[in-house]
Image (tube, rainbow, N blue to C red; front, side, top):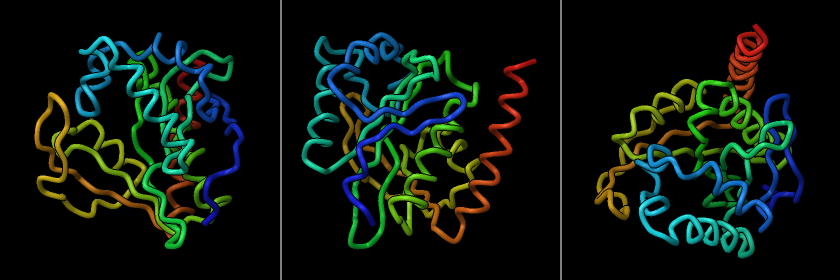
Length: 203
């Protein structure tokens, strides 16, 4: 698997994913301050004065160290919507995780997340050469689990007492995956969902 990924944007019809740079800090901050975004991710982002900057700096540092590859999720006209990342790369095993994904609530149920996943999964399987893409979430995060099941990703089980999260406590993690054999069917499903979302948006 190619790692780190080529440093280029991923272009869709609803969203554009741009590799993180410092210039994304303030645009993303402007759409990141809704506490409901961070309920199961990192509540410190909105509950501490430096919370967002600490989150952003960690993602920049991860990218610089080759441990992650984060994207700013923008609308096609350049408005900030959120972010998503490749995490936990295992290039010798052709594996990577997609995670730390969030969108401003105004972008929920618009097709933005569907297209972002289509772009990131396609890039991982078709260009980076991934064999396996993992996704995980707090086991209590029913909304996120439903979104993963709808890709569809396969539920692989619960990692009990998997990690500690600030202001959340001890977390069990629900693990999902998509493997290269499954990608054509997943892509077809995402493309159909995206087409339906475009039709609704243009009505």
